[in-house]
Length: 358
Image (cartoon, rainbow, N blue to C red):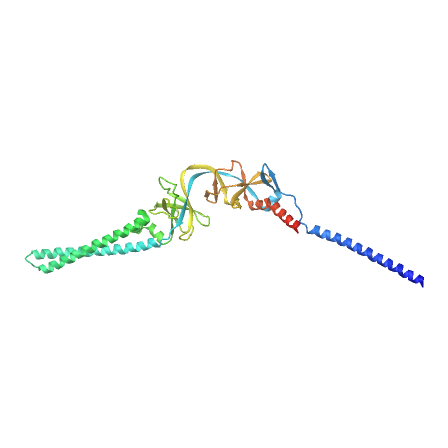
């Protein structure tokens, strides 16, 4: 009986030992698996392609990566460009001009009718006066009536003439002599304006800017960034109340662009002499932190970011005089990829810090 009890005790101890060993093994295996899972979840670390050289951030990409990303660099193009003066413009609403045209046509018609009536009544009075002088072939009463009609027509003619001159004065005061003459003569140039084939723009200089004479041509930068050649019409007899400077009228063809009346535009007036500089294609520009940049190719596989001015836009790009040198090569395609690559390490570092907090 005692033997049986001892065997049961030994068997129980063995079973407890086996169970304990199994639990310990299972716990250790679970820790190993958890460690492996965390290792799999960690982002794969790649070698940084960004380094600091002479205080500048340099992006290094091998030729294969450049080809895959479509990165293309080209030698800066040296050009000669006429100096430009930036001014502000607004697309004018021409309803007022059309209304004045109608007023002018009406006043001119009334003047012409009054002039014709005056000529008729004056000739009739002179005819009756001759008959009255020839042995009273016409009575004095008929002659007096004819004279009254003539004087009345004369007054109406003078009144209508003054009204016509008043309308002409308003047109000149608001639109200048050139556009006024276009309206008076109904020239093709005026018809293109009122039919919206051409767009009229008022360009205003700042108060501190003075020109001996306005340039005959200018570049107008539309709200969508397009540059359109504009032709000078005349000085403007009025100014933009927001700017208070001297103003000029320029026109551009509507088919080139179609800004709405009241839209603000930027004008570049061609003044001064030609200046040597470089052409920066628009495709080379990237924007970061509200500033414009290009990537200069430092070596076959190295690129550094450099700020570039966009204050002098020209067709398909920008004109710069500083910040670059003859022989520089800039990235004209794929610059956005370099910008993303330059700041990729910062993004990865931010992700790592967030993971540490967890």
